[in-house]
Image (cartoon, rainbow, N blue to C red):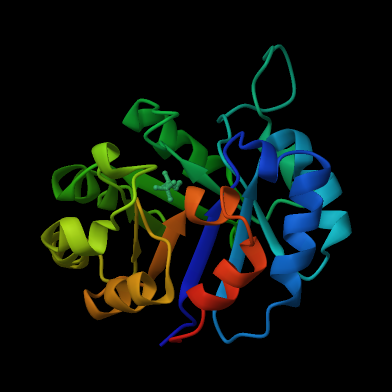
Amino acid sequence: MSAPLIVVNCKTYAQASGIAAEALAVEMQAIDTNARLVLAASALDIASVASAAPDLEVWAQHLDPVGYGSNTGRIHPKTAIERGATGTLSNHAERKVPIGQIDELLAALPPGFDLCACAADPKEAEALAHLAPPMIAVEPPELIGGDISVTTSDPTVVSSSVEVVRKVDSGIDVLCGAGVKTGEDVAAALDLGAAGVLLASGVTKADDPKAVLSDLVSKI
Ligand code: G3P
């Protein structure tokens, strides 16, 4: 079994942007754990975060399926990779894209580059599974940023997503997110069959992010 994955999404939280993102990356890199830790940074911060914490995996929060050329404002995958990104989120609840764009992006990415496609529910997770992304994260939008973990308030959304995705393609790792804040939430996610978690505010709004990170990996 591969190492449980914990992806911290910086979004545009002040505590995880610019210099603060670099500090968070350094703290994450220093965590002694068997879990796989990833920081999904703002595109603006990928290079500085990757340079501040060279041993930490840094992902983009979104990439556009574009090449070099006339693509104003788009996030160009090849440049993100050159800047240090080793993976990306796609179709996050706060950055939805048409499903065809995820397919195009998958076709444009080099082998080994991780893409975690986000789904609101098992139905969307199943549809995304047909694209065969390396990972799918299920996050009920109404629970995002809340205080109760999806693993407590809606555990069946996690187990059902795992089940339907496995039926389509057993090689896809399913993560869950929304309200995840503690090591117990991570353990519950793993018990429900998830390969890991995707979270943001539990870390980015914490008074002591280092303590939260240590707690998140404490049951692994
Ligand atoms: O991308 C992670 C996310 O949407 C969940 O956010 O703040 O509920 O951990 P949060």
